Image 1 (cartoon, rainbow, N blue to C red):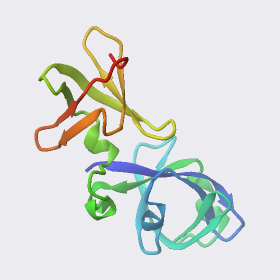
Image 2: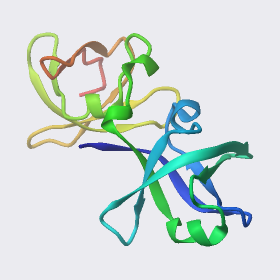
Image 3: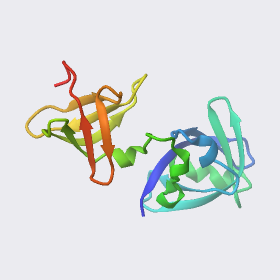
Image 4: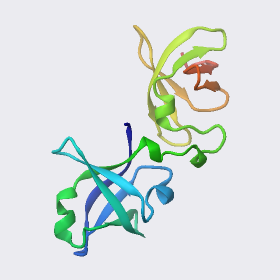
Length: 172
């Protein structure tokens, strides 16, 4: 089963078993709800620890979580630092508007031009500002950076694992 990062557990909060989490998801409100299960990936362990959320509140730039059966700071101290993840089964396409995709759906797609020229494979997505940038790994050449804008990205075909693009002047 695949797991996807949704937050970084960075510290404890108080003495009643709460933890500070920096969300790394666009869907923090739906990911961090009472009753949801998240999985903690600790730095020094290879297994995942299943945690059921039984308390959620916001504080400054953090989401403060409390987990079921973890009533004191002593019960959560070992969790820091950790990456919080959700399972693939918990992803829902209902979270996405038309034309939106999860990063994991885009990474690995083949990139071709409108004329059929193969450019390479998307290996990474950067989010530097106004729009995402898709990093295309090319054979024998440096990576191609494609801005995720309608003028460049013409068609995304998940079924055929392909993205069709128009290379604007200066992108090659």
